[in-house]
Image (tube, rainbow, N blue to C red; front, side):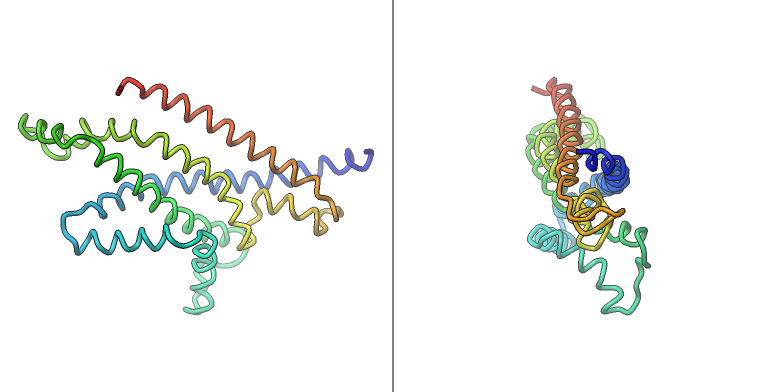
Length: 228
């Protein structure tokens, strides 16, 4: 027990550093994937097949392949195949590659949620807007958008919670996120080896973070109940 309390501050500092990386990857992914997903959704719904077909194919490929494979390809392909290691070396390069992979992956998932939300708004409302002399842009922002947001909050919330846990996949390219930090004490980190208990503390980080997100997203959903 005395050894546990001696090691505890070392483990907590390491986990805090790893969680900061996890939190950064989470936030960067959301900031990039939310707007990019909307652009992809518009592309997949485009009237011209020369635009919609390639976009739909891209979404199908991204959604149909594991995120772990996408991470490995995005990180290693430029250096091994093109002989141009664009990400550089070190933690910064791994973080950039992880961010790009996560943004692309989640943008494709978000795009399908957006598309479903937009298409769920009755066409009659759009036609009524045209009759009243509104432009298509005005109809989207004043009629469709807010109703779409209300409809997509539950599935988006699920994806956001999944994203928190998926950030752990970044350790496949040795990004030092929170699980990487917890696992390192099994292999011999900071003079500690063969210790599995830091992984239980890692689980607590995820539980607390997901709990906070669940509460915040639940409040957001309740605030949008005026669309009922």
